[in-house]
Amino acid sequence: MAWTAAGCDTSDDTDFPRSIALAKKTNRPLLLAFLGTDWSISSLKLDREVFDQAEFADDAKYNFLLCKLHFYQSQERSPEIVRQNEDLAERYHIEQFPTVVVLSPDGRELGRLGYIPGGVDKFAGAVNTLLVKSRSSSP
Figure 1 (cartoon, rainbow, N blue to C red):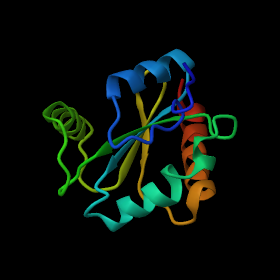
Figure 2: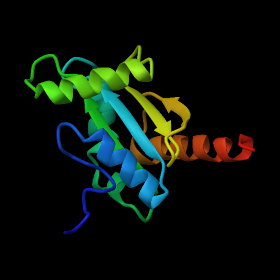
Figure 3: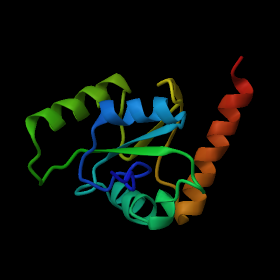
């Protein structure tokens, strides 16, 4: 089985337990993206300009995983996915969309980002800056 979707899962919703397990197994940070793409313009821009770009899925260039959590207002989703996403939004105290919570491979929160204009390079640069800061501040 090819893991082409391991870097970025392009499905409408992702499996958080699988994503966090993969982050731990591969020792890669996990970007937990809380998106409202059918009602939040910034969420839609972040999804289209960054997450949906093939360049962002390039594991050799960007060594992090993505778990997209959609909060649709106009699309049906399974009750399990709705519950998973709402539980995670509550756990991470999500108050605005989009919010991207950057987690260490062991699940610790390292920081948060929102929509950053400028596409993949600008967004990934901000993530990498956050990762470097977290490394230098950890014991």
